[in-house]
Image 1 (cartoon, helix red, strand yellow):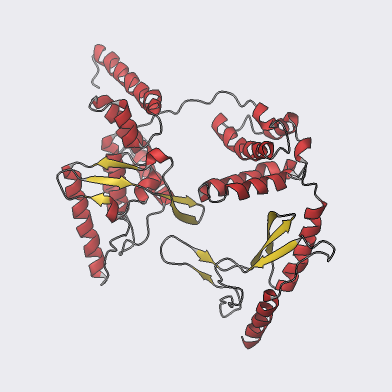
Image 2 (cartoon, rainbow, N blue to C red):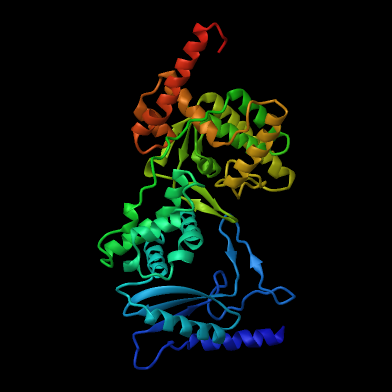
Length: 432
């Protein structure tokens, strides 16, 4: 272990005097090394386990920091930053890899970069402006679909035929909505090239994917909701209460997971909830972000019975914490599995748990079909439209839609069809 400490100290000393990678006659090229994410400053030792492997740590809450052997190099050529990731166990080895990357970067024509370089450049420009989920999904799609076929091709050499050739085998297998999702990172990266005046026309804009089907509204029956909630409450009370809250407010899954105790204003004549954050999850990563749209930042009124139930839920959480000699955090999450409410329920857990429970209930005939949490949002929306107690603008505000027309296009038509079907069955003498 002493030898490891000496090696680390030697590397730290070398890093403080990290030379520029390149040649003396080209001083505009500089490479700046950065320590592994989560390891602190350059002269901090990376935490290791007894077997010498790098230790993984998780910070309190939903922000995760992981120690890795990855070195991040920011290479500047004529003032333009290019970011590359290098995995190495030593600074000297990482420096050699950086030199090879630098040679590759310098060999590229900046006026006509490869598609991979253009995509990475676009990713840098949107970092901080978009949610981590959006960025990570685009990266995965690009690496799986576009990079193997077109990644090394120069942007100006990419045409409509090249893009269509990649999509051709996918068209019979995927819906139009999925094809749009696959095309999106390529189209946006090439649009960035248009903005940078690298190309004049975006070839991806010429691709026709067909007409996308309208969103089909699938409300969950209230009886099915109650059965799923009762079954879930036996093993997971927090998630059952979360499902009840979604069924009352119509919140999106991530919005409901992100509700904190401080967002619930339960005292007074008109209780309400403030919706101001969204919990995102991508694979094993989880974090907080803003709501889906600006309209998602909203205040939703709560009925008096809801306020009573939420207060009772708060007391239950306090009792759970007290049994472990803990306290509920004032700024904790209202629907949390942890006693102190310091961490939210993961959105994917909600979907998976509801699918498992409802699937078993549907198999034995207890409920009509398997369900998912988003169907409760459709239930709330269709009930609001059918009640005729709120205008379209007010319903759009409650649901967090950016345009009232969404309510008319999706939910109002579903209510009309349901009423027409009920009238037909009634005319035939059937019970609705």
